[in-house]
Image: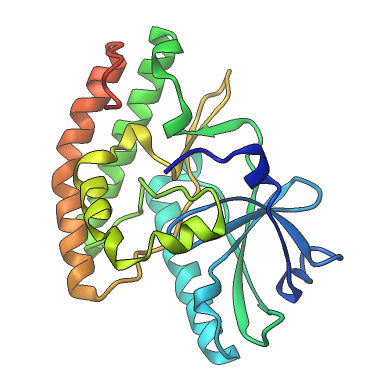
Length: 248
């Protein structure tokens, strides 16, 4: 997907759902994924994530929030505090009357998603530091997979606007998703992992959602993801050696 343009960054949303976190109920969209809209808080200190398709009544939304929090805590414990950030969950009713789950996270101002990192511009020591962290993250996610049968989504998708995010769900996009999953995306091009600026460079996961698919399909998905970890380790080795083609 293409990078966010200046015009798209100014996309704003006005909705009662933002009342608990913003007095004028208007938030600025700064990004999004396959299922999520991401907004920046008014003071620039936190992010608000919204999955509007999950809107429901209070008991259903509460069930979603509890499960999302349980999974997020599991993923954060798996990766450890050096590679994770906290997530807070609250319920809010939107302007259409549906109860939504809002996810609140600290905004990492001095960080870039890995797909925006120019690895050849890093020094040899910096590439080694990033490579060591990525290998550790892969090892930890595989350990969790062996324990529970699923793992964090370290890859993710980026959508430049709400309309683009919705268009990605169209049936004709299935071949593109398959190509992207098997070939187009790798760990070095991740949307869900952030690299903070120096001197203490950290690789941090920012998405803690479990793939919302049928359990059998989800198990197949993670089994393939597990097999693809060997490819990511090969690319990490190439990146560490300074190979400019490592990201594909």
